[in-house]
Length: 171
Image (cartoon, rainbow, N blue to C red):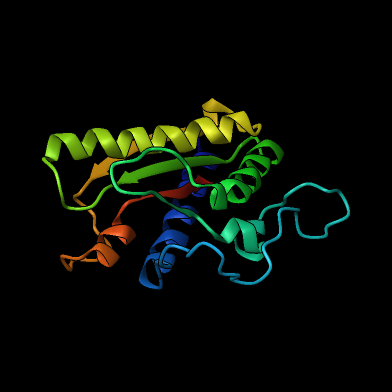
């Protein structure tokens, strides 16, 4: 591994460690609820392209969780704008890399949930690629039911665990 890659990796780990301490998972958006403006355009930098740092500045890019219905792999319509933003970011920043982490609720066997988490992450990957993202920039992983954000045993909690998180490993 060359020096530039090592420096970038260390910097990313430092930023990632700081971000993990402050990580807040937003609950799924209810249909018909307006959670404020969501931009699908890069922040104004004059070039019309996303730049380094836009992942934290742009409201659309800050949304990095896609939620799913029970036992489903179809992306809900309310997440299409998020797919478009992240695909454009990947297009504009060819050196960026994203990991799509598929998750499920606790119901079902370990094997079933690992497969379902992978299918969900692949659905997000396909949506990003269809909107212009490159397959070489995307890595898919499934955690199944192993990384819940909520541990209660009810539908409200389970709906928070049925998700794919978009994690940038290189900006």
